[in-house]
View 1 (tube, rainbow, N blue to C red):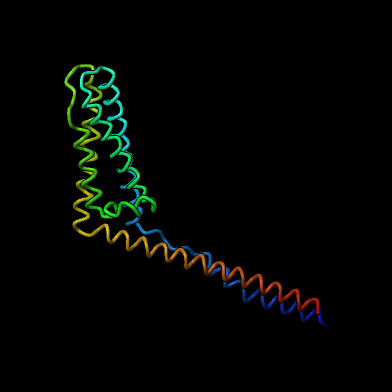
View 2 (cartoon, one colour):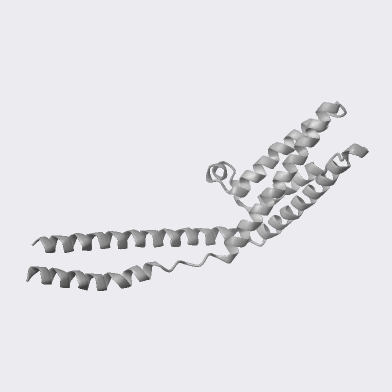
Length: 200
């Protein structure tokens, strides 16, 4: 008799828990706006990396030829700023804690424009530098466009909208995770209750 009652309880609990597992399977759709912002950040970071590569080659050429040491030093500063631009696009919390201005799109855009101007400065005129000058033009104008978009978007408070949606998305993901943990814990307790009743 106790075995039959245990089977009935187990079947009843299984019927009650099946809708719960179905309700936890749907996931919230990703925000298209945040996806676009991430893609644009990747594009900006890649453009900044191109500026870094161009400035490194320009610095090496300036120091090796001995034609213009000051141009080489200038390119080294551009490389450092380029690294800051790339790290800012990752939005690493450790960096953002010390560089609050990079959280705002207008400040980030002005830094990118400054790097674009530094990359475009002092172009070479010799025939051996034509490919390098072409890369400098491509990298600088691309980063200039990205920086201009950042500045305009920052003025329009789009950066604030992005941060607000990011917080909402993080809160929603955390709520879903907590709900799944609670449902998992509930199922474990129900199984323990079934085993305890079967023993009795």
